[in-house]
Length: 276
Image (cartoon, rainbow, N blue to C red; front, side, top):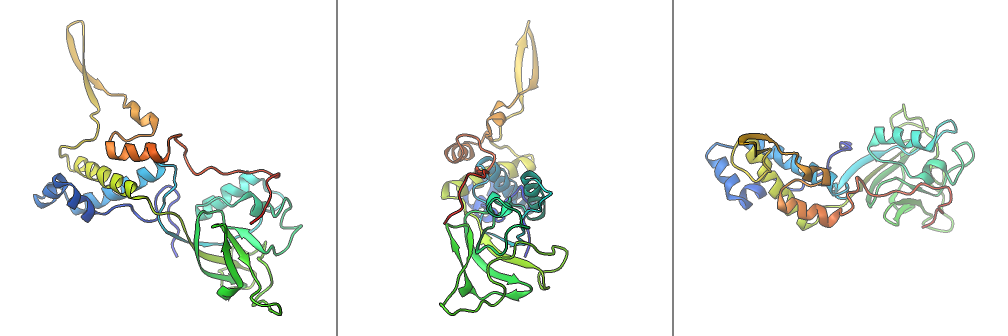
């Protein structure tokens, strides 16, 4: 299972067929060999990544990832632990899981539920403890983010140790004793307005790559001082506002991320309860 880049989408929002079919200029440029298929494919990826980041990283598409959960060692701060796991898997572990109800993995064992740090958690593909597959009737998803261990019957005997391990050996593959892994799907697809915005931005980027006329803002402007005319660079102030200069894309950005958030907000506090 692949791990997507942390700065881009898991699934692109639009494709070359949609863009060329929606915008005649792009379709004509392709047919006349003024634009290549690879340039258009690149533009679709770029447009998706740009709009994903400018809309606050809310819509990565449906992602798949293998998680290797583990509680925070005593010697690590929350900031260090969060940065470490983000470098490994591209997501921030929650404060609750990372501190194990305010303690560390030395002071708590096998919690019955964990937060994988992504939202929304859509599907659990498989879970392995000590290299052994845990049957699907022994866990469920709560609140679109919690992986909860359950007992199917009153006299149930768990397939592997009860609860979820708080420690594991990350140097071993997840087929070995002493490991814990969760293969899961998570994320949200962009709304129809985001798909249309990506197609519009991709079309203009593709035309720009091919040096064809496009709607991307010009970087030069003319001014006259004391009878002398000159061309200077436009400061492109719209970039400071988190916009692209393409109308369809900017309407979507303003509607979904009016406060220019860089990512979905998170709360880290020892006073925040842990419930489902």
